[in-house]
Length: 69
Image (tube, rainbow, N blue to C red):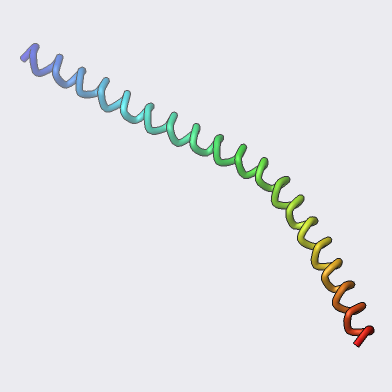
């Protein structure tokens, strides 16, 4: 009977440890994802601005080319 009680306690500790581990992994993943998302937003905005600028230059060059024809 003592062995069974010890085994049940050990099982509870193991299951609790596994639960805590999963929670920590989930919170670390969420924190990492949020940080990466914030860093990427700034880079994406910068690239979008560059693309818009290049589209503007292309449109300008095309309109100048069309006028010459």
